[in-house]
Image (tube, rainbow, N blue to C red; front, top):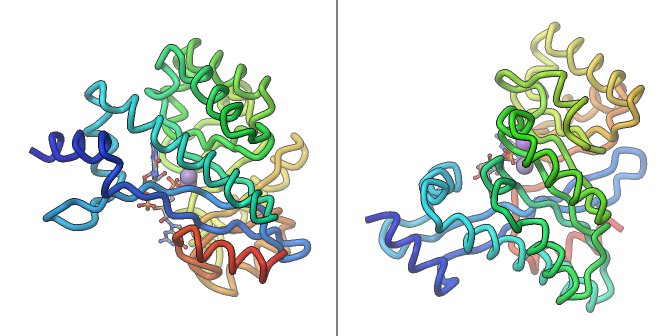
Length: 253
Ligand code: G
Ligand code: G
Ligand code: MN
Ligand code: NA
């Protein structure tokens, strides 16, 4: 089964890869960090999306070693780039279920110490934020991560049923505006006003704002006009293998 194949891949590490997508600061157009996005190359079926296999793994204990693989790989990558003289912040995606694992915070802390990486280099992007706010344990884990000095981001903000009470309950410093909203700002007047107002509100509450899914220059210009802090999307780059990030970092630092 697909699950058995995933178990083999997680145990051997074969077929798993992190790709990295640049985030660009708008004030100076420099690299502000990268988002780590997991890929699984299945031995016969080819590339399978994390939106397919993460939910599968989450129904089983496999999610723990899989998440550990992502954490360790991302932290090792930060250390490796630092050895080559590059400070590149990395964000990883974490679901509500991940936060319910009793020792997730300890495992992240231990990996940072093992690889001598500063917590400030790591960012956690929170997915499934409704399930997070519904769980006091998940919120406590996020607070503990923040205490360590890790940055917390609210991912996919403005999508689905996302709720303003996330701002009260999740100790985030970064809001990531969902791509469905961002991509509509040039064609849909309401989306434009919503995004502009969200950026103003976020700034009034001292959040940094990143717009994702930026695919064209018109959208970029609009976001600049709204004083958005950072952008991410195909306009600048697809997610890339780590060696490409080195070239990219040199060109954009
Ligand atoms: O990069 P892509 O469009 O394939 O990502 C699809 C979805 O999978 C996105 O919602 C993204 O946040 C999620 N995702 C990517 N990598 C990871 C990961 O390492 N862990 C978790 N939990 N989700 C991830
Ligand atoms: O849920 P999350 O925001 O982590 O998921 C990010 C997903 O969006 C990844 O699958 C990534 O590959 C994808 N993505 C990144 N930039 C763009 C873009 O400009 N356009 C589109 N359509 N998808 C993007
Ligand atoms: Mn994300
Ligand atoms: Na997102």
